[in-house]
Image (cartoon, rainbow, N blue to C red; front, side, top):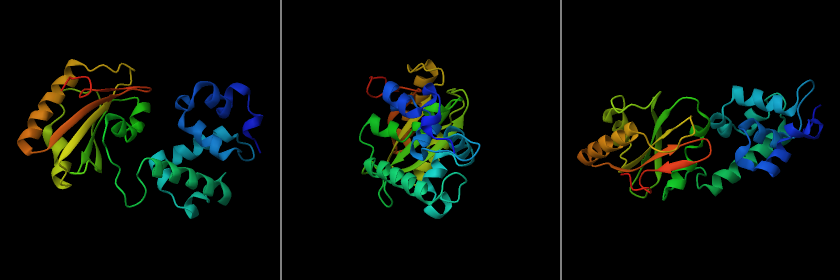
Length: 223
């Protein structure tokens, strides 16, 4: 059975975490640290990749012990450790079962949009908030190059009406790594703010997410 210490030094996720910071580890490397060991014929990194290919993070987070422990390469003990780690993270972010996460800042919103950092295409996502600034819904509105003419207010605001949201935060990623807004980004923001005023749903912010940073149009005075 291959263990983390059996890997070449440059492959060791623990050492990479220490030297480069946790934000520079890929999802499968973080999972490998929790798993510690692989299985016969597979390194721990290979096992981690296999698991995340079958169970993307959002799905993995929701698995119960019985389901998780049956995944090849895990077992009961590792399943318990993973569930405990996920639960600690949920509690730290205020998303434990039955409690809606509060969005009081751009950073709070970005914490709910981490999956956008690794996307190879542009994803346009909206966060829908109630009167207490609690996140009641998150929807992917479109996938592909952001164009002002392709983002229709109907698709953006329908979930707000359905969920009785009073405000929204819109966001999209820049796979290029450039965090500054384009002309189309500004046009989309203006169009949606105007539509929101008519519907009584405030657009609080427009966030641009990159692999290691973000840009808040509100904080930067672009709204």
